[in-house]
Length: 139
Image 1 (tube, rainbow, N blue to C red):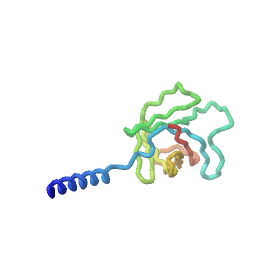
Image 2: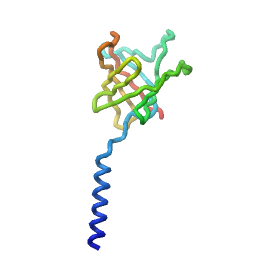
Image 3: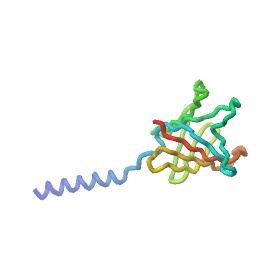
Image 4: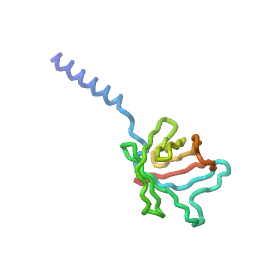
């Protein structure tokens, strides 16, 4: 009986150590829709624009569990962007495509349904106003 107790205690300890050492769930996985983008300096709305200027707005992002992401545009669904990769740490989301890396400071709401990304300048970036983009989880 004592050996059986020790055996089950050892199994429980191994199970707990495995459970405690596993990575937390990836908070980005799912489909996100751009709700709004504001310029940091002025607070003015950058997206949605009231003007139909023909600009392609990439307003949906699908983050997949294999650390690939797909972007698409609701006003140009025929555009086909190839899968790209992403990574994240406690502070930054890094998106990698054929042009290189883009880093964003991110915040995800406690319930996990709102994502805010703030542009981070990286070497070689085009000069543009810094924005805060707000996404909502749709799937």
